[in-house]
Every structure is written in C-alpha cells, then in structure tokens.
Length: 377
Image 1 (cartoon, helix red, strand yellow):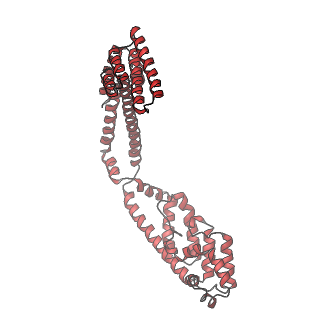
Image 2: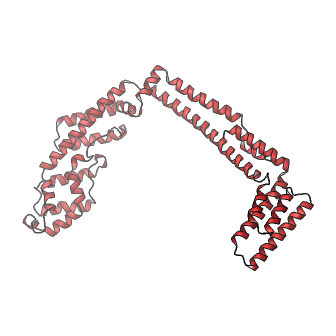
C-alpha cells in the first residue's frame, strides 16, 4: 500500500477509535482477551473437579468485573460479554467464541499499530531511496568529471601495454624455466634463496631460511651440487631401495627434503608462478622500485636483451607518469567516456535529478512518522 493510502487508512481507523474512546476500547479488548484465555484453558485443561472449581472461580470474578464495569458505564458491548459468559458457564466453548467475534471494534488498536508500522517503514524507504539517489548523483557527477581528464587515446595505449606486459611475462617465465632446467642445482637454490629476500620479486618462499640453508649444506656435502633441479626432484620419488644407489645418506636426504619439498616443487614449476612478472594492477610507485630490481636480477642471470629492453621501456613509462594515466583507463567505461565527450552524460544526470525531485515532492506531501504517531487516537 502506498504511503498516502496508509495515511488515509490510519485516519479512518483513528476516527473509529475516537468514536468509541481509547479507554473504553482498551477495556473491551482486555475483557475479550480474558474470556478467550478462559475458553482456551477450559478446553485444554483436564476435566477434574479441582481444576473445574478453579476455572469456575476465575469465570465468576470476570463476570463480576464485567458487571461492575457495566454499572459504571465504562464498558461497551456488555450484552455480548454477558452472552459469552452465559454459554461459557454451560461449557459451550464454540458458542462463547462466536459471541466475542461479533464485537465489531475488536482489533482496531492492533490494526492501527500495524498500519502505523507499515507507514513508518514505507516513509523510511522513501527517505532511503532519496538519499541513495543523492549519493548516486554525487558519485556519477564526480565520475563524469574525472572522465573529462581522460584522453581517449589512452585506450589504444592500454591495449598495447597489456600486450607488452603479457609478452614480457611469458618471456620471463620461459627464461626462468629454461634456466632452472639447465643450471646446476646449487646455482638454482642460491638464486632462489637470494630472490626470496625480496618479496617484490615474487619468488616462491622457502618454509624457513634455516631449513633452506640446511638443504644447501646437504646438497654440497653429498656431492649433489651439479645435479639439475629436475633430476633432484626425481630422486625424491625413488623408493627406499633405489635411492641409496644415488645418494650417500638416504635418511638425511629424506629429512632435509621433507622440510623443503613444497619450496623445491614450486621452483620446479617456476613458469606458472608469479616470479619476476608484472601486472597492470600494480601502481606506478610499486613498479618504480620493482622494475630496477628485476632488471638487476635478470642481468645477473644473463637474460636475453629483449626482456631487459621491454622492462626499460616500462620503466620509462613509469618515471614519466604516463603509466598511471594509461592504467587509469582500466577502470573507465569507454562508452561513458564517449558520452562525456559528446555531452550526452548530462541527460543521465538530469534523469537522476528528476527522479529525486519526484521523491522529494512525495515526501513533502507526507507527514513525518513522529507527527502521525502523536496524532494516533
């Protein structure tokens, strides 16, 4: 039901309550509940003499109070109450309930509260919608203003930048995979351990540096330093009977491997990791620190020139500030940007403002719930 309709219903209910009188209506409701409780107790209680006497006494007390209220002229519909009492004394419960149901004003107070609660909820909903539209207008206004500073050419640069980043990430993944396949195990472990001290390089982290150092010492002492990483991982899969043919201390090998196996396996899968890769989700201030360290790291490993060239081009974009301008377009809707450039975004804002104006007018035509509550009969 609409708020204005609810106000009308509340007004009609108020008129009925005023006509009867709230105090008289409350008394009618009180006796109605009291008699219905008695009917329920009579029906649900075991029919013993003691219980019967107790309920009969309650019934007589209620009858006397109804009679007194009638004598004081403070109770309406006493005829209905008397009939209900009469049939109740004869234990005709259904007939007693029907007599009470014939009282027309029952439920008016409950209905009044229900209508008011619904009105209050509806009024609050209108206010919330209005405030929501106001916030949306402010947000869209700020958004469209920010788009005015965006150069549409940034979209083309963004596409190119995404392609360059993807090509670099694929290239660096291939390079690391090849290096880890061909380099001696000791070199792989040292390089990986050194890189793990720099979180921005995103190398797999060892479970602890102490365990990693124990692994390096074991590899060196057992003469396994010249093995490849993948050969070493094969040893880990050998049976207890086969392993002693390749490792002098199988027990020590199992122990040192157990505490490092997750790290070793992640190095064996380095291509799918994020090591040395970059992302458009990273802000320029982060890349300004990260890229020089990646360049130094890759140079140390003898990476291909094209990888380093790609990183240096990226570095120039970052230091010039152009990177952030291009990156900003990742959260921009191109259709919205074109609307701003054509001026058609104004119609969107005006539509929201018109919708808000209609709600404001509707709210102004309504009464504040507090005023409505104070006016309840």
